[in-house]
Length: 328
Image (cartoon, rainbow, N blue to C red; front, side, top):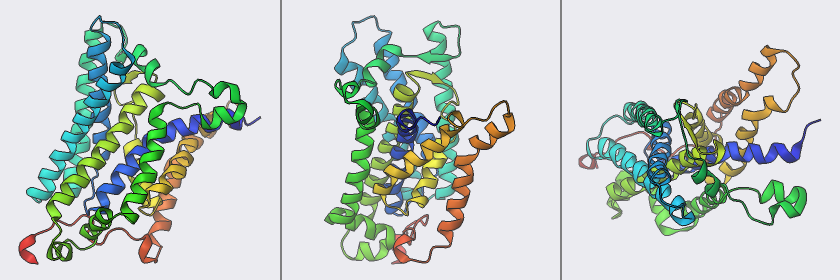
């Protein structure tokens, strides 16, 4: 029988990295920049946190819960922030093509993660080509202590680590910020028409830089969550898969509304693991077909979204276009 009580928590855990990635990319795109390097940013955020956790866990000191969380978190923020600054410098200051720059950042991020992941696995002295940070992961994965006492309600809603709840809060706050605050409305104005925003006295360059950097940091947290929580502290090269690209597709699926990313990410997370819950017998073909579901849904979503005619469901008008102040 289909066990919904065990299925939903696993779907949520699968969806949290997508939640972080789509929320960060939405903020970036609202400023008019299309960052196809989100996958690379998530890789760098993940491996940066792994480097920090590795240096602390293998230092020989007694594990302190606060430091075990703070060190990887700070390293992740710094790594993903540097990726955001690099993308901003290339696309805003140097006005490089945003699509090419994003793809280059993805290639760089994956290579960066694989290089340092392989290096750390050799330093750890293990016989397997991966980095294991079990002590740090246990601290990251701590759930509310009374969740087990509340039956199915506790398992479905209260059995997650703090980063899962942070992801939900970030999505809801981003939605409020973009639609209900003055700074958020100015950011959207920059994404819609930077020339008009500039003429109104809004510092377009500053808004773009901040939006991209904040979006990159949020996306990087998705990489950290995947390693420390979902993968139980195990870093394996290329294990992150295509989640960065699906996070970008989710931005279109949610019509650039971060609050919708919460449910959409869980939906996609459920599609990822559906093959493990639906009996397929010995049929390998059926198992592979179920594994294709997230990508089939992504294609269908892109087709449907391209047919939408409502203005509020369209991307920012200047998305992907470099801004030349001299052309105002």
